[in-house]
Length: 202
Image (cartoon, rainbow, N blue to C red; front, side, top):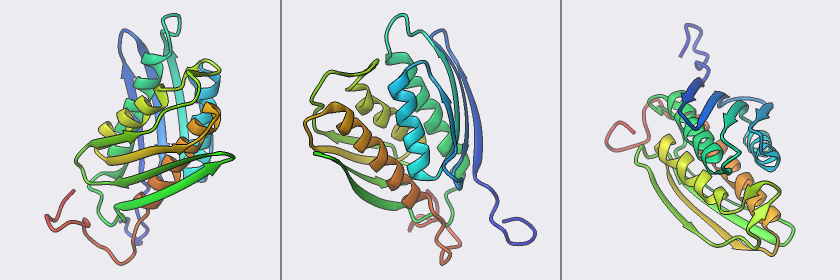
């Protein structure tokens, strides 16, 4: 809390530099859904923009990755960096709602996501994508994005592609479900002044 009892802004800026990628992420958890994203992968940029808009997160992502090899390092390292940003922004997780779940449709496709801001990273993912690529994004990298994000955000995540015929729709439904679920789980509960755990900490 600040001096006037206004909750402190939950923000983070994270830089990740490796021999494969150089990434900057700025995140505001309690934002307006504004996104400024550049990864070099058009469809991935579109998904990150959708993630920010539907989660009402303000998000800036700048990534210079080794796309001459493939999309793996870029997607994985952006997810790692974004997960680190969520972990930093949420700090001790005092007052969060903690649990949330969403099912999101996009035409014939449906994706579901359940999260627990437990502090214990664990991921279960079910379902397959109908086509191997969407634009320049390997479809299954959406699964890897979810796993890497949850692991570095220290979140328990259960996600499923329930049905679909078009990988574009399946991936987009997943990103939207992930955004809405994280928005719900990270919201402050005005009834809570401590961490929502019998342990007293998350």
